[in-house]
Length: 73
Image: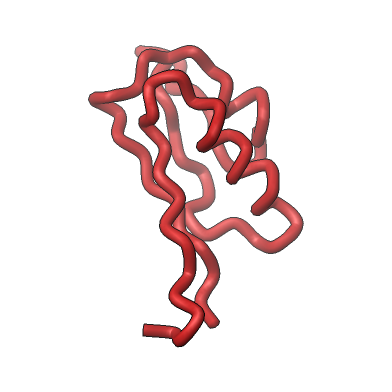
């Protein structure tokens, strides 16, 4: 089974920083424009819960969590 994969839409991001506060090992904010930076598109199991939470609390919906296909396709 493949690990879930994250993607971000920087054009949709409003720079609220909820992602970086919720999952600082997975997300950061660009020092120039304050927009999301994805540090780890396939976080290890220990970081997946916080990454999932960060995607859920993003006020602009700029973070997408692509769940793994249980069949590995």
